[in-house]
Length: 228
Image (cartoon, rainbow, N blue to C red; front, side):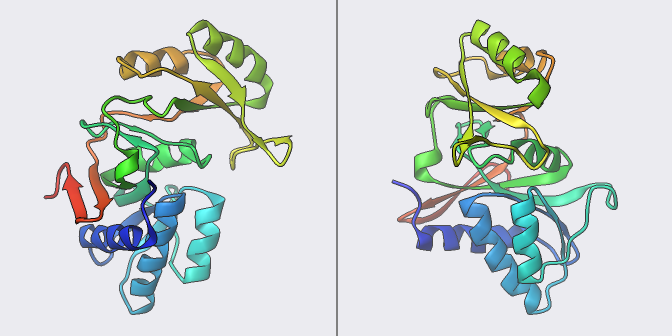
């Protein structure tokens, strides 16, 4: 069962504990990140100074509506805290992201961040990555067919993501191939193999980032990973 509104609000409130005055904050994309943006915006309007780096045009639009000041990776050397959701999280803190279509910008922001805080419901916890059966891969339009053939040769079953009957375009002007995948026993090797395909610009595998994972449950927020 997906996290309910009360659980998401509790996750968003807990995420604020990791943000200091004057921090540069990565603003994620998706349902959990949207709830966090509303909670953060309320605190900003009360006088809490931060600057945000959005991971999508949608989160940029919402941040502007909520009065959250924005900056960019052209203007700052690093991000203090990145707050985002995930589609899968394994016990080691490795993630699959990208069901919302913002995987490339999300990965750039996460990699530039000193701390990554991930907000998930219990339904996103998996024993092994790939348990939900989908791995998004972002590819340039020119290489879509060639990338799909090479992904097929890796044992994946790629299909272009559609939106309203049209090929979906990411904020970067690219396409997403959603790959049917079994559980991924060696995610680092799979990441390397996919990234070696010319035309691939990013995958939904977020590995080795050591995030703090906040888990919403009926018993409250469970914290997994570094807290200091």
